[in-house]
Image 1 (cartoon, helix red, strand yellow):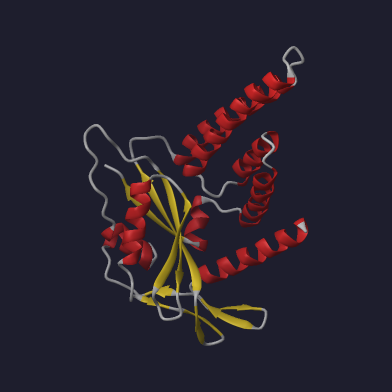
Image 2 (spheres, helix red, strand yellow):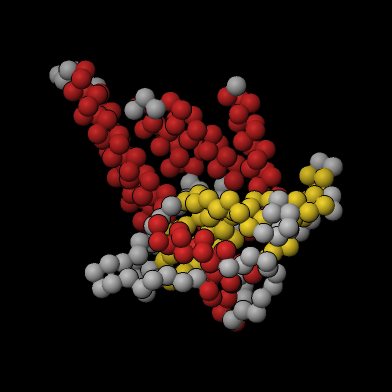
Length: 253
């Protein structure tokens, strides 16, 4: 059953990549043309971006935070459906950073309603999923890779401390479980923080699965292992995001 679920998940992954390409692709006996956002006039500074990224970078509106507040950095990932009639629906936040930023991205994408040419399968309009990444970055802070690495490092320290507590025979089983679970949950929180910066990192997914295992959360563990397997097949770096998906970059002030 596990093998079957993994096979199904990989099939959906392949179809997802097919839907992102900017050209016709033959998948078995099907000629698949992904949905395309119509070209728009863009500024010289963003001409290297895909049309949808150019639109987001020029039109995204976020409320200016107060002097005592700030927007967190991270990469928001939004998945939505381009229907056969070109309308948009089924908006899903795939990678979370901040509610206000996520809603701003969704609102901006919704403004493109009517500007999409639907995908086609063998010449027939067909509903297809589209995924867009929007990176919110502050030039004054360390690179995302460094921030993710810091959280990952702290997560592993907490995980191993939880393991050490489980192996401490001076504690009762109840105290072992209670104290170790506290560290495994903290480890998960740090890994979630790392995912904000690196949404497609297979190693982070692996250690999330390890924490779920220690917490007895077997369904979550299996789901995370399946995700890890998918991410390993993707091996997506930030540069590859531009190839497989659409990555817009917003500089926070």
